[in-house]
Image (tube, rainbow, N blue to C red; front, side, top):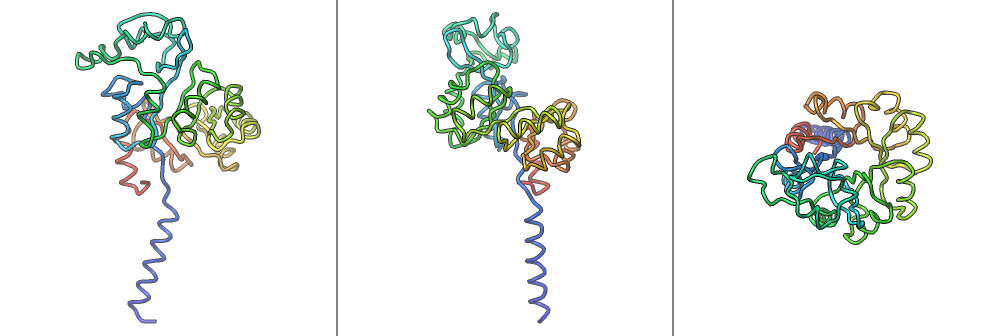
Length: 261
């Protein structure tokens, strides 16, 4: 074998090895890109799309008459120019409120979005991490079906709620909080898990080992003090397949620099 052919085969073998070792790490934009845009708004979600994130995370609640809207807190006090509990307010009254005025006058006129509006924006562009605050399984399944997003979402919530969701639509990816090794084993059996959520409390070696042994993907929060390159890499090294971040553009750039995208 001549030297040129030997070099070619060696190069191909090295490339295959590197390719086999490289994985795509999912970027989840927490409440959209909310450091420069009001959280849980269409502007924040569009910014997450523009940043190259794979998912934006949103928080869904139900109004007094059963409309699905986006708000992290149980009340509107922190995020709007109004006061009151989302569950006791009508959609019309919620829609009159302005979201983001506390962030600056440039956000005047920004309204509380509906779940349908967020799904419409996401369709064909990005996945959605649905944090189910106070909604029924039937309502979320119906909305996702309307927008042809069944295979483009992960659904976060309590075990009983998630059981209802996957009973209604088995193709949905339920994503409960891992919590601890014993709880995660139970959740794996009862929900046929493909993915589990981890945060600072349960992202430990014992619980991670349970997920990895069952081939369950790990989506971990790296928020606050943990939202930096050192902690991102630590999460990847310990098996994370996805990272939820407040800095989606920066995380995308980091992952590209390391060959994970």
